[in-house]
Length: 225
Length: 218
Image (tube, rainbow over all chains, first blue to last red):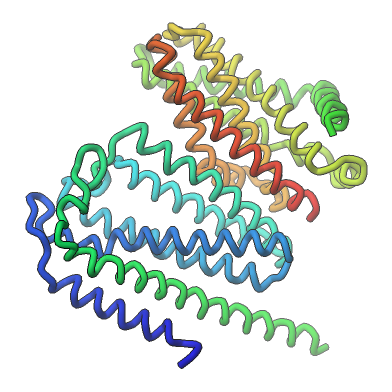
């Protein structure tokens, strides 16, 4: 129970998110209507993605300082979990945008920003796969991961300044705070962020363990002869 | 450190001068790219399109020009530099050298663009300043990425996919300021954008400076 309490918590929070997010009363608003529930299933994907990527950068820095392959395992798997959230975020966002803004893609700065982030991290995966030596792969991968992340931060600030966003809360659209005076949405929204983040961490750690087992097995095979 | 940087830049220039085909090749690349654009658009070009095409051509030429930074010289000589110079001096000298190279490409591109596609720019000084700042950003970003790509066999695809997403903030700011310069807007409108561009350049250069020793060592 000591080690896996947070996994139980993740299941409970996500069950709560699903049930409460879909059934609880939400504010009635023009255009948004029931799609305001996307807050719990779409917006939370971005929070999950950013948190995963920050953790990955942290482990990349740690790898460069210490040179321990275990940190690299964490970096790559947390990045993968971040990419998973990113893809889900774009897919859910596009569906939602089709019904509220009328188009799957409308050049919104947040849409573009997230697409660029995905381009960056797909390139990161390709870079890693093109290197064969594990240590070199880990080192070059870590360097690119940190470099890309550092370049991505200004982008988040630059893009919205160039064009207004269509998202609620931007470009003159009232934010959710304005809609949500009785904090009904927040009651589900915050637990949902924690739940999805924990799920991401869970996926990442399972894959890290798989990766380490694989390496152990390979080492055994090599050292046999 | 600055002594080393000066010597290394001089070395880059001498090398480039000795193998003139590389330099001439990239200069011809710019001219051909502009000419192809000219033939493809066939006639009138709106100002935003002029601006966008110009920057796209500069971007592609810069990617090609900088891509060879770390593969021009063979392994043995790299090892020699590794022993005599600090990695910081190497990255700084490469960034400065590539800035000059990118600026040269951008100016040549501008000249050819003006001659065959017309020159709509009203505020020359702002346009050139912006070119210089863009060149610094492009060079810092691309030099670092070419260092990374050189470790992975340096294929052109990798260089492009690694650098494009990273270079987007610099490119967008530069295109934006360049549009203001073309329209001849009051300079006050562009000041904060120029400062943002400089800040992005500073971030990218600083991160490259910190991270480069790690790729140089491997």
